[in-house]
Image 1: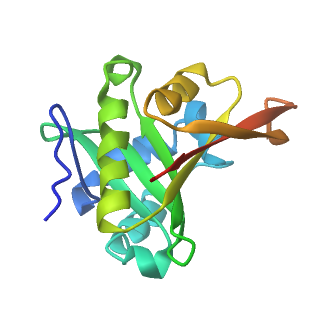
Image 2 (image 1 turned 90 degrees about the vertical axis):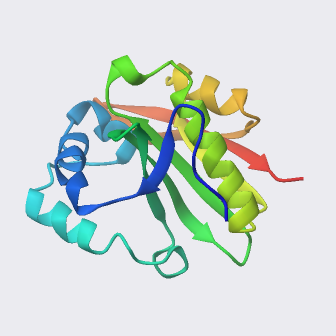
Length: 173
């Protein structure tokens, strides 16, 4: 069985105890640009989401995992737009606090997810959508072998202006 355990972090399924972390993350306006969120979430709505988080990736076409450092949840990593027929999925990652960023934890989390996606799920490719002005995320994905394959012009409207989004892809060869 594949373990989602790295040297410094591990990935695990969402648990009911993650409600407060999810509430803090989803209601952080600084992160709304990358998630497409436009309004706060109530704890009630997030609890209902957690109640259904056990559903199979083949059913809901997505998988959200907690990035944990020891027992502490520091972020989330997602597979989304899961397409088993064409053997591909999107990848999204967020680490909540600045102090946990830029220490290789995101790199480790994505590498674990890549291994899981290619080995366990049998995917052929992963893709990521990153805002053009998000230099840290672009660097992160390119560092682990994602290639820039296109620009989606004026894709995201944020802070009263349109922004380009970079499409990156990693193919399992």
